[in-house]
Every structure is written in C-alpha cells, then in structure tokens.
Amino acid sequence: MTDAQLQPVLYEVRDAVAHVTLNQPQNRNALTEVLVSGVHGALTTMIDDDAARLCVLTNTPPAFCSGADLSHTGARSNRHLTNLLELIVGSPKPIIAKINGFCLGGGIGIAAACDLSVATTGSIFGFSEVRVGVAPAIISVYCLPKLPRADALELFLTGTRFDATKAAQLRLITRACPGAEVDAVVEDWVANILLGGPKALTAAKDMIYRVAEVSRRDALEKMTQLSAELFGSPEAQEGITAFREKRRPSWSHVID
Image 1 (cartoon, rainbow, N blue to C red):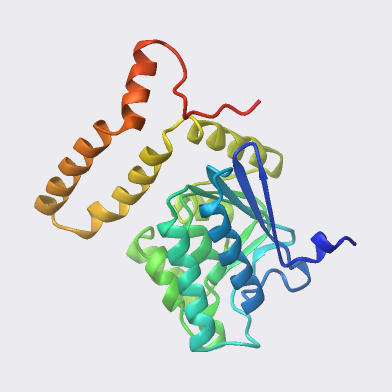
Image 2: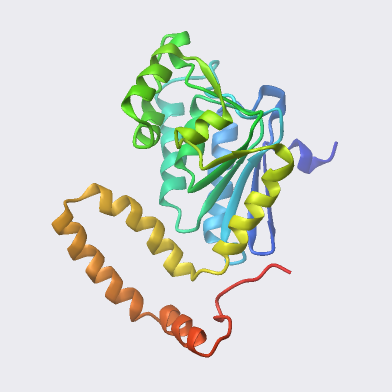
C-alpha cells in the first residue's frame, strides 16, 4: 500500500476539478478528529487553489461516512464538525458530493451541506442518533430546511434507515442513480459548472442562502445592488461580449 493510500483524506486536482476523498474505509469514514480535520484542510486548500474551480467530495467504499466517532465525542468534536459544515456551505467554489455506500448521521449533514449530491442507489442513509441516546442536533441545521416536517419527525424519531432513492425524494440529496451512472451525472454537472463565470457561481450560491435569511424587502434591496455589481463586473462584460461574438468567454473551461 502506498503512502498516499494510507492518508485519511486524498486531494488531487484534474482538469480544474479538485477531488477530495474520505479514505478511512477501515472505520467506514467515521468522523474522527483526524478525518474531519483532514477534510477541512483539503477543502481549505481547494478554496485557495487557483487550479481548482470546484470540488468533488467522495469516498473510498464501503461508506461515505458512518457518522460520529463514538469513541471521542464532546464539545471539541462538535466544534470541528460545525466548522467543516460551515466551510462547505460558505465555500465560494461549488462542492459536489459523490456518495457510494453508507451515509449516516453526520454523513448526511455533509451531504446536505454540499451544493449538489448524487448517491448510488445501493447507498443507505439514516439518522440513527436517537438509538445511542442523542439527537441529530448539529446536522439538523442543514437537513431540516430540506425536509418536510412530517418526514423529519419520522426519520429523526425512529432512526430507521432508508435508501438513496428516498433520500433524493426527500431532497436531502440531489439525485440517486445506479452506480454505473454516477460518474456520468457528476461529469455532466462539472462540465456545465465550468462553463459559468467563477464570480457569478459564487454569487449564485451565496444568494440562495442570503435571500432566505432576510425579509423580502431587504432581499430585493440586496439583490438589486448585487445585480448591478455583477452586470458591471469585468467577468460579466467578457461574458456578454463573448455571447455577442459567438465565442467562449475567456474564463469558461471546457474539459478535453
């Protein structure tokens, strides 16, 4: 086994895409301090990496993430998970979750925090916290906005597991499909995202959260200002000019 294969988190950039892989299959990628710190560090590197326009966050099977590391819990581990989830939501670059296997507890929180997510139909989800005497407190901040209340009550209170198809129906993830189709789904998302302006993508992601957090009047004021800033930006001027000249903007990226 190579040194890279022994790393808890793998990081690689190919064709403007950062690939971050949870790589502790021996404990089903439980949220150990080492793993959480490793993912946080890799995503921070991705955000600062000029060669990366977006990120695909995935896993070494058999689990995307089996949830909390029950041997080490408490305020410190909770803070590390909170920091990771906030980094994902606040990332100026899109993050796609590609899920293959078990996605339980905190793993669902990570999937829900990502901008787009796809899971193999054989992947298993579950909020199992109540079965060890706790509740999905931190991840509820990211999961409850996506879940109908009746479904949240059923899943949080019973702790029963469900498949990726149901996770997609509940909008906890974007899509579920057979394993042979997952790469094609991700590649399609990646190809289309890379056609967008980097600053425009950041603004589009940010507004989804900002608009929901303020009143309609405040949202209109903020979005009117943002629209003016975007239309006046060099990125938009290049995009508009390229459209008129029927060419690709200089900032778009096409994977060979």
